Length: 171
Ligand code: FES
Picture (cartoon, rainbow, N blue to C red):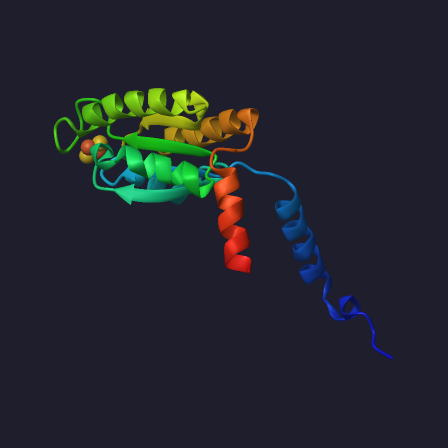
């Protein structure tokens, strides 16, 4: 007689499976963060090395400067199913390329307006200026962005398209 597989699993594995099940069944916001390597990425690094706790909902992409963030990166992120986008760079006046963050700020304002026209809530796209010495601030920003995105719920833009792609891959 075959015994159910579950009897052979150690308790730790079982509890881990339960955690996975919880993760799968409960929606959690997923944020993509484009961080300038000179300031915000270093700030994120400092948050980690100084053990500042922040929510694990962010996936980080290192960019040379916030001015490098093409509006298409933001659209692509939302299209892939991320629920929010964070662009973070050096404080105004501190950009290593002089005006990259000013350009980023202007571009972001226009992109937000355009996406709002398409039905994307403005809270999904956020910007912040975090220096390399502001690990605690980085942690606060991530928590705040996650909280705001959680409030507005999952990103439904392009959901049909995403579901169609998944179905096509599965077939
Ligand atoms: Fe950091 Fe430009 S180098 S925003």
